[in-house]
Amino acid sequence: MTGALRIDNRTARALWLDVNGLSAAPTGASDVMGIIRALGMVQLDTIQVVARAHHHILWSRMNSYRERMFDPLLARDRTVFEHFTHDASILPMEFLPMWQRQFARKRAVWDAKGAPDAGLLRDVKARIADEGPLSTHAFDTKIDGPKEVWARPPHKKALDYLWYAGELATCHREKFTKFYDLAERVFPSQLWGQQTTDAEQVDWLCRAALERIGVGSVGEVQRFWEAMSAAEARAWAQGADLVPVQVQGADGSWTDAVALPGIAARLAQVTPPTSRLRIMNPFDPAIRDRVRLERLFGFDYRVEMFVPAAKRKWGYYVFPLLEGDRFVGRMEAKADRKAGVLRVTRLWPEAGVQWTVARQRKLEAEVDRMRRFVEVEALEWTA
Image (cartoon, rainbow, N blue to C red):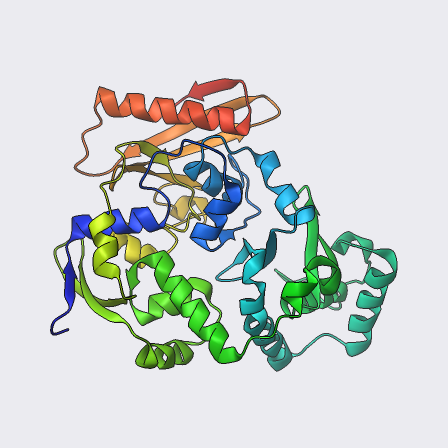
């Protein structure tokens, strides 16, 4: 790009950690909603090895966070809603008017592959309308034919369809089981009824994504929310007031990208991240784009939960270790809540990283903070 603003690798790393809320120490007053708004979304995941992904992601940015702080946001305060971005996620409730196109897109995907029976959809909605919030366990339809992997009974497909389409909404969760209610009984009326054009939604989503990634390709903007097609994102970029930039990778190479106006001033305000060592969740927004992660930090990371044990390079649920602006290692740990113990089972320093006594002490301090976070009494090291 001729005349593009060039961003060296150290500055690019600092910007990326800053926009992901990982630049400053995770101390200070509790502000869970502030973190969620700044990130834009927080991914949900069923796996609980130490803590579920959304809890760990929030704790990484706020040491005072505890799991009990989360449920009231969805079930009582209605300050967040749950829907599908790149995966199941929670989003600030005020984003709802800009999410109408995603409800429509997901409905269209289901319709294209074959929507559930219309009568079943009516029956499911009628039961929820009459009885109040229900989970999938309240229904008893059976799978027709052989029980293949990932096969779901008709009622589960109906609930999913209505949820994706925005006719039902997650009302609350009990032990992570989702309860569905009518959207109009969950979403605030002033937001649910707010009218925005499709063009307004696309523009807002793209700008909000670029604000949260700092700099990126149009593809990265599109993939942030996964709420539009690549063609729609390209069309937006052609008419938007964007600043061309080039970003230096960890290997010294340069990649073309774009940024919002004001990027130069934003870069001038970015400060080096704290030297703190952090235990990162595999689904943290700072590392979920593995290609970007490797390009900026030279850190090759993949999740291996669904890889057969014999073929795993590292382990089932491996936590990246971030120190300052560098990934220095990986760790495997598991919380046994019944026994009241957090066990660190394996530790792998990255190639070229000297595992000093000072670095080990940093890790031990962070592991002990993690122990307090999951509220167990004991800590065991077998690594």
